[in-house]
Amino acid sequence: NCSTSTVRMVGSSNANLFASISAGICALWGPLQGGANEACVLMLERILADGGNVKKFVDMAKDKKSNFRLMGFGHRV
Image (tube, rainbow, N blue to C red; front, side, top):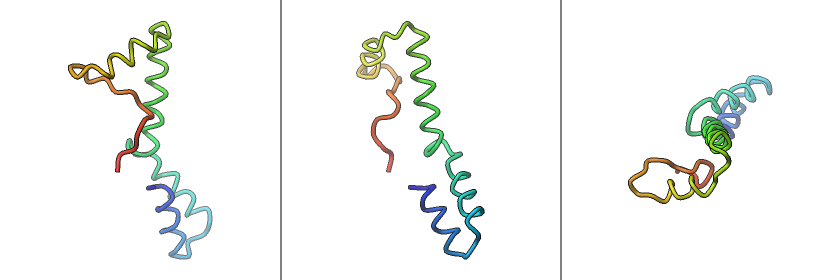
């Protein structure tokens, strides 16, 4: 994964531990890595604000006409 690879690459340059870990944390900033977690939390908050009707959101995800996606399932490669 991106953050682990970043830590290893920076560490391989003999950078100190703090610089390596800092680089890995920075790699989490992107929407395809750490941003995916944020999208999942926002989706759960949206479901809760809508009364917790999970079935409604699952049905929306199944509907091919809807662009709604359930976050937190699968992994982009």
